[in-house]
Length: 300
Image (cartoon, rainbow, N blue to C red; front, side, top):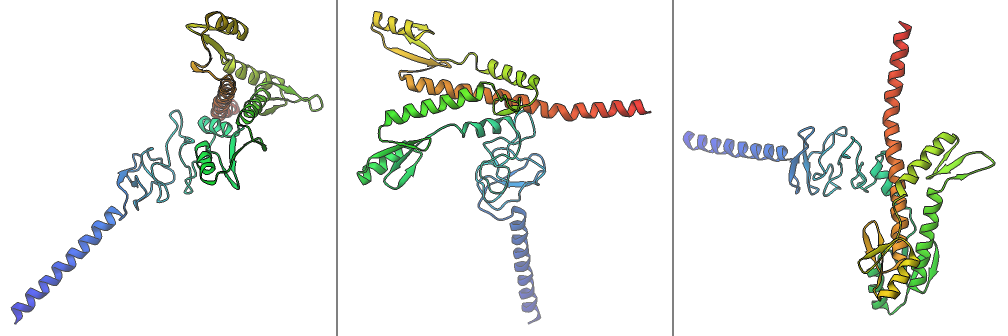
């Protein structure tokens, strides 16, 4: 009888140990559906696809292929190649909205580009920014598509597209062209109001240099020219189709070429200013530290 009781006791002990080991394993893996990888900076387990693994400490940064919380799938915290700042393609907080809370130049450019005029589509009471979705809605409801640009609605697509091109060109031209206010004496360049003429001059030089090589050229057959009149004459003479070239890309639509040129100028100008501003922001603390050190040495 004692022998049987001992066996039973041993079985209970083995079962209990198994449960404890299972629980311990579960805790170690930090149960979840996600595949765990290690955060290079801390060694913590992080989830690739939104499982329940431990997140990296807030002060550390995981690789782009990892997720730092359960809401994210695919990577929330990547470093910019040239700094410790996060890029616009990834999230800086638990909301995972893809936003950026830093002054990383990539974030500045992406934010600026998002402010350019856009075309949206209205079908009945439905609105969308996708032309294919609009076409599908129109087909299902037998309702015509209306095109919206800068809060104006158009029935004709070409008119709407022309309005998009013109409004984009106007915004970009205003952005890259210095505008001096005679009342305040300030000069606005690339979205910044400068009270100092030297600062305004430097920003103007940066913008001018960034956009000087961006323009529309014309390709007729194998020959490329910069003058639209010369292109028209060449096309009439050879019978070849005129193609529009912007930054090495070709299109047969003049409106598309204008839109590409305006967009490219805007992106180049914003990027040049963002890089300069970021460099200045990094240099300022270093300069202040040097000045402080010099002052201390002088005092001693």
